[in-house]
Structures are given as C-alpha cells and as structure tokens.
Amino acid sequence: MDMKIFKAINRMSGRIAFMDFLMILISNRARYLFLFVLVCMWLAKGSSKTAAKKLLQLP
Image 1 (cartoon, rainbow, N blue to C red):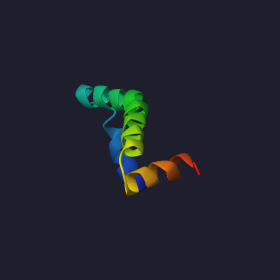
Image 2: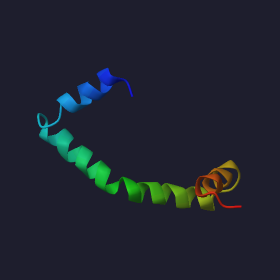
Image 3: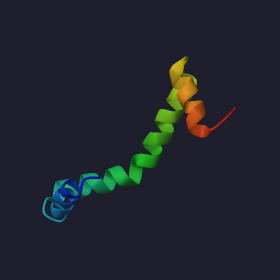
C-alpha cells in the first residue's frame, strides 16, 4: 500500500465518530460476509464455483 494513502486513512482515526464506528463494524463482521459470499459462490454454477474451489484448495 502506498504510504501516503496509509497515512491519510490513519490521520482520520478518532476524528470522525461515524467513520470509526463504521470501520470497527466492518472489521468485526467481515469474516461473516466473506463466508456468505463464499457459500454463494459455491452454490453458483460455472466460474464462480471453480473460483470458490480454488480459494478453498479443494480437488
């Protein structure tokens, strides 16, 4: 990641209460969203299912 972007994001920390809340919410719930998307890909047909298999490294 570009250091300028990293510093710009981190400078906002603690200044905007809504953004702090949003980032905490996203980071706490991201694993569930990832699992939901993975299951949806697994149940789909075609390249999405193939991508889900590759992600899980299944034969």
